Length: 340
Ligand SMILES: NC(=O)C1=CN([C@@H]2O[C@H](COP(=O)(O)OP(=O)(O)OC[C@H]3O[C@@H](n4cnc5c(N)ncnc54)[C@H](OP(=O)(O)O)[C@@H]3O)[C@@H](O)[C@H]2O)[C@@H](O)CC1
Ligand SMILES: Nc1ncnc2c1ncn2[C@@H]1O[C@H](COP(=O)(O)OP(=O)(O)OP(=O)(O)O)[C@@H](O)[C@H]1O
Ligand SMILES: [Mg+2]
Image 1 (spheres, rainbow, N blue to C red):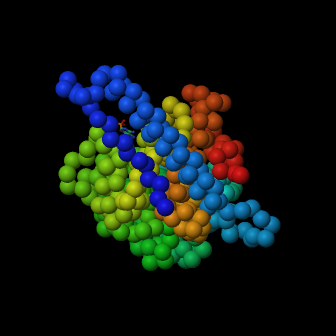
Image 2 (image 1 turned 120 degrees about the horizontal axis):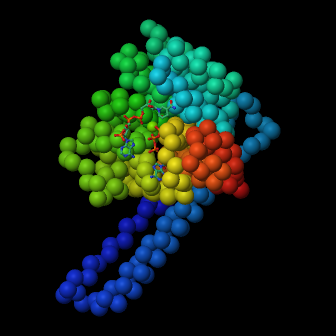
Image 3 (image 1 turned 135 degrees about the vertical axis):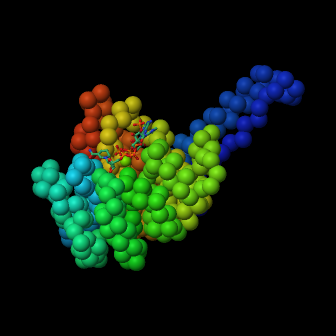
């Protein structure tokens, strides 16, 4: 059973319309309330599906079983983004979070937190080999937060992507990882365990790279569906006022209430927590997701979580809310949304 977003056709009342103005008004009112009811039902369904994939906390498990997540990113300019992504995975419930970054970024990232395991390998001549050693231990990779666009780093990331695909590891691609994909879409084309998380700008770049016609800005649903299909049905999360998620077959929308605060780093919280949820969802499988694509469920879960963190942090800090405040809300937001 699939639970895509339902579209409702609404007739337009022109001068020659058989519907009187009042009839038209009542029709529209009923249609919209039905539509809202459908959306509410979809939301309820997706909350349940996310709850189904969250692993139980039991005393029988050992360290690592609930998630070992690797972040590939962090360079001289950007140290905050990989830290946010790695911490978000941990705070959402991962047991271990690794950062593979450029040498210069490593001491900085380590100094932010003793919780992270940091490998300063990304700009070394044998970067791919160094990361490859760790791949058998990783449940998911998040590629791109704070990666930058240096040619050497991007070349190494290409090798890491190839090696990760060969091991069938789920890969979330964000930020400068999406820059790389826009240069070379074949890197991810058709890989069914990839999730791309473009913001507005990143979506436009990807669109230009893989779809020949201009983007139809009046129909976001059709656009995200089309981009996913053009990439061979990889899952795409188009971030924005509402998040739209597609696996090339359906489109689901996440409209969890957030706030109007748009500080940098919120996308990193999303990609880090999504790495973890992608692992959980794939492990749980189609039975737990009632036949809905596990990656669609994971993406919807991470989007809801990010927006709820934003909402909660904004209640406390208003205009001064930063991503650090949002990360501090992950525990409470997770419990509120997904703990039964
Ligand atoms: N603390 C840290 O270390 C952080 C580091 N980060 C890292 O920075 C790196 C670059 O990432 P990025 O997102 O800044 O780059 P990119 O894709 O060029 O977009 C930039 C341009 O796009 C535009 N734009 C964006 N949204 C838009 C919208 N909704 N609607 C319209 N326009 C929109 C906007 O254009 P402007 O308004 O300036 O004209 C903006 O200038 C990457 O590694 C990332 O991980 C971040 O994670 C933050 C925290
Ligand atoms: N206008 C908006 N209203 C509400 N939520 C939004 C809005 N725009 C983005 N978001 C939410 O903020 C989160 C991050 O999206 P955003 O577009 O800021 O990513 P980003 O630009 O990649 O962030 P980053 O600064 O980490 O790179 C997503 O969960 C998205 O739902
Ligand atoms: Mg971003």
